[in-house]
Length: 264
View 1 (cartoon, rainbow, N blue to C red):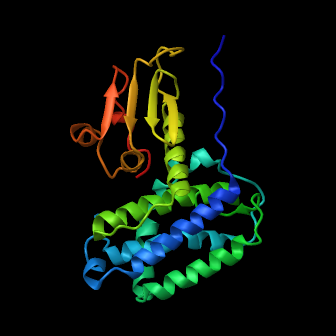
View 2 (view 1 turned 180 degrees about the horizontal axis):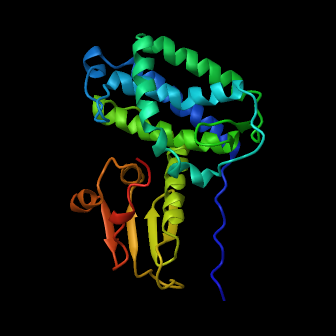
């Protein structure tokens, strides 16, 4: 009998909308408290400063508003689980746009207020199935908002680490980000020989090999959500996480080093 096809995970659109707005609100409040000294620090992302990273964070939600202002594309081009693998090609454009945005908006409070007002107004009337002409490919609004949780959570963590800040992560946004990146691993390495556990948000099976049916799986990887997100996005290397005991991995197929990062 062939293995059962894995069901694609679904997300509650109302909860995702609330999570995006909540996390952007958290970032807005946190950026407001940063000093000029903190804003001038290196962001550890290329040659960006913390100020440029803070400006970039507004782009994560402004793209929603901007795409809702544009004509609706004729057909969907990208499924949610295609998105993590479609982002690398735009890295250069994003870097250039970020520097320009930070230069043109020296008052971050004004920038954040404007972006927050725009997305709040547009999400109030936009239907979940509305197609957006995203740069990675046309997606539904509901799917695109899930990708925004990844952008917001990943870069909030970047901001906290670079600036020494303590901006909170919305629980629903963190959960959605963790789950999408875990499911992306299962797409990249299909199979059922290895179980990856990221409590309390996600468990996925991946990697080709003997299929596990009962009891404790022979190959198990377990870590916390933030470590997983850093691994999946290249912020932390697999061996470093193992050496620092932030990941436990048992079994001959539990080495995920060759599969990570999932996103650049």
